[in-house]
Length: 289
Length: 336
Image (tube, rainbow over all chains, first blue to last red; front, side):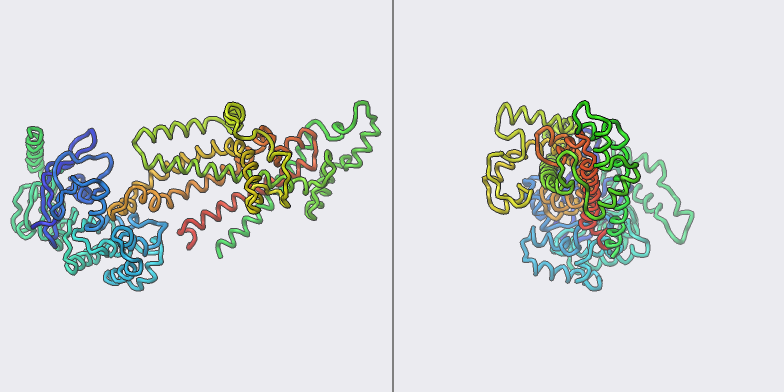
């Protein structure tokens, strides 16, 4: 039984072209699914749709987002918001902009626990300290009294991870959580997310353009091109034998330390042409109902 | 520590600024045509009369000499004697200052309430017709100057629907038990709500006339600032926590969006104080501005000097307060 089921979800720009084309995928409880694709392929859009934070310039035209057996899109907005807040969380991309500069760290972790889940403040603060310790932040007490600008980028990303896990969510969307970080910090943060995910048994929707990250963290994988899922498979199978020509080309284009020339291989034009034809075919199917 | 140093530096520059203002005003009002002696003497006065009176007020000396005498007095707290009323300038000016301060602060409060409300409503209802209507109203408020708003208000609430007083600061027949000239404040402290209501009914229209253009500026800037803030990541993150639009705007976006607005409000508030000169005249409100116009008409040189110095001092004080408030509200400056 999957915890999250996205069923033929279509999103488009208001008065413009499609951004997601009948995307379907499932995430089981405790499963980590990677969403990969080039920039603009729509991988972040899926996470935003699940969390109800699609930009105002976009609209969902069709499909269902079923979370724990309930289709979120059929709920009234206030109830949908509360349900998402209570059961899901986001690890954002850029830790430097994801914390409110004029609020202290403590309340930014505890606010959801107190306001949305109705915990007593003391319990929420104890929980925040516990979580900060879990993400290896020394002196949580002091950090909770700090403002974001007093902390480093890596520190802030740890705080955001702690904050995401604070309410014991069933599902976390990690939106390229290491992209904005220093290369030396990326590995630690990745390891930390994996560790926290395993300890808490949280399902994870991991948006990334880095197949190396996928191989380390994910169990299953959706490859997107132009808002279309071109491959949906287990990570182990993907790296052994990609099922789609585009996936294979993507894999070949991943930088390798051992072979500098291969690192610069672009996706071949023939493969792009083929996958574009598939997108066009999907659009025709959609317009014919 | 750094804050204290900044504060002391500002005090020093303030002194220099005030000195500069004093020199300029002192020279200009003596160089322009028209002099107080001619205003005081009846037609047909002899040269000897003019000379005697000039000597009496020290106007026969050179301008630098006059300035030294005056500045020496100012340093000892003596701003000279008003030529028209023959009373000490300092007492006259300080007697009127509370009226103008109350009017300005009342106008500022009104502007912040109206502008803030417009900005928050426009942000909450962005993309709807209400937002469009607020933008149009903002544009109208901004394109008409305060004294014209004063006339409009007089026509509306003084003539068509006479619910407010159109002139004065308080109904003259009332018995005032006040020891200070802060009527609005003191009536509230003394719980004389009857007097308070009368004072507000007098102050309402001039304050609103001053407030309308400023409220439009506040509304526009705060709304723009909110709009930019609403796209930031921490606002989006707050939405995923389950918070609704109102909370997101008020708790996450507003505290950050308010900072650029605050600086501007400080600058605009000094313009507003300048605006009291005409507005007080329009509503016959007994404040500094009204007194300034009388002083200029009568060429009351010591009084003009005193009023201008006071206005300059208020301007620099407001700017200093804004800087301090900005530092207090912005944690990045507070801890730096």
